[in-house]
Image 1 (cartoon, rainbow, N blue to C red):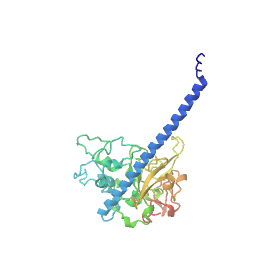
Image 2 (image 1 turned 90 degrees about the vertical axis):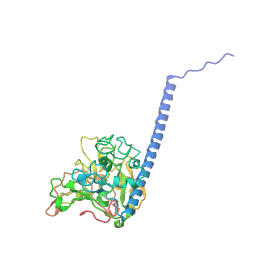
Image 3 (image 1 turned 135 degrees about the horizontal axis):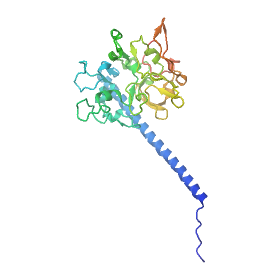
Amino acid sequence: MGKSRRRAFTIYELLAIVVILAILGAVLYLVFSRNSVSAARAKSAANCNRITAAAIMYSAAYDEVIPISMKGKRRSLQNVRDGALTIYGEARTDTWVLNLVPYLKDRSVLVDPGRGDRLHLFDAPPKAPGDPGFVATGGSFRNQNRFAFYGMNYVFLAPYHIPNKRMGETIPMDWAEGESRRFAQAKDPANTVFFTESQDWNETFRGYYGITAPAMFQYVAAYDSAYIIFTSVTPCSGDWCIDTDPSKAGQQKSTATIYTGYENGSNVSFLDGHSRYMKDLQLAAGTNYPEATPQDFGVGSANGEFTPFGGSVLTDKSKYLWNLDDNYFGG
C-alpha cells in the first residue's frame, strides 16, 4: 500500500486556529493582569496597615494624640535639612509622613506598588539643596512630606486652622497649622476613616498626604472660616463630585485626592486599626456624591446664611465614615 498524503490546512482552518489562539492569549493576559493587580492591591493594603500601626505606635509615645497632619506653619514646609532653619528662621514643618518614618521599617511602605515610585521620591532618605544627588522633583524633604501615596483624613483628625489674628494677612494659608486630636475623642473608631491610597490631584504617579473628606468643602472652605481645605481651584478638586468639564470625555468622578485605581476602590484603614477594601460609593456613604456636580465658588456667609461652594453635601450623618466626634465645622 502506498503512503497516504497528509491533507493541508485550508485557509479557513488556519484562520480559525489564529482566532482561537488570539482568544486564549487575551484570556491569559486578563488572568495574569488581574492577578498582578490583585497582588499589588494586597501589598498596598499591607502598606496601609503598616502606616496605621506606625501611627498608633506614635500616639502611644505622645499621650495618645493622633499624628498631627502638619506640625508647624505651612510656610515652613520647605527643603531644609534636619536641624536647619527655613527662610523664616523657623524649624522645618513636617507632615505626618516624616514624623512617622522612625516607626516604619523603610520608606518604601509609603509607595503604592500598583503605581510605583517613578519619581524616586522614597528610594532613600530625603535630600536638601546642596546635598550630593539632590533632584528638585525627587526625594527632597518637601516632596517626601507632601507626596506619600497614602493620605490621612486630615479634615477631621488633624484639621488645618489659621489663627484669627492671621486671617488678615496677605496669604493667610501661610500661617495654617494642623490641630491636634486624640483617639479618645473618636465616637466610633471602627467607622472613622484614618488612611487610604491617595493621588496628587490628577497626577496618579504620586500621592498626597491629606485626603479631603466628602461633603465638607462647603463647610470648611468658607472665606470667613478659620478652617481650611486643600483645593487646586479646578472643578471638583475641593470635594467629591462629577466633573462636567466639556473638554473631558464624558463625566468623570473626582474624589479629591483619593486614588480609586483598584477597580474604582481603594484600601482604607480605620482608627481602630482594621482595614478593608472599599469602593468610592461606599466611602461617600451619607452624601449625595453620585449626583453632585461642581458649582460656582461662593462668597462665604451673607446675612447669616452660608453660600455653598459646590460638590457633594451631607445627607445622612449616621452613615458618614469620616467624622471624629460630631464636629462638622458648622454642618
